Amino acid sequence: MQVLPALSKDQVQKLVAELKKEGKIYKIGATKAALWYPENTDSIAS
Image (tube, rainbow, N blue to C red; front, top):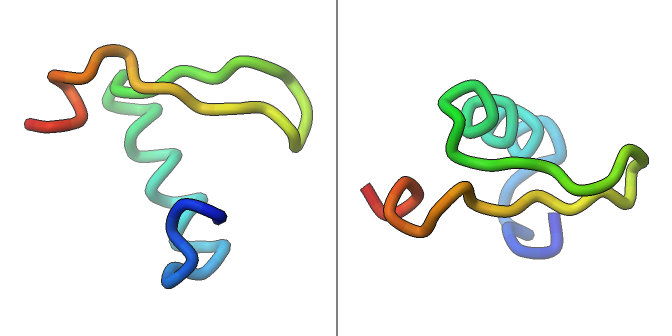
């Protein structure tokens, strides 16, 4: 939400779910404070 302030919480959640499904991101942590990172920089840019 901090990185994409123009998007609603629902839009951010859908985007994260899509990127996760495509294997483009991974999560570190198990709580609301978990952080998401790109699998590799090439997958996000393409």
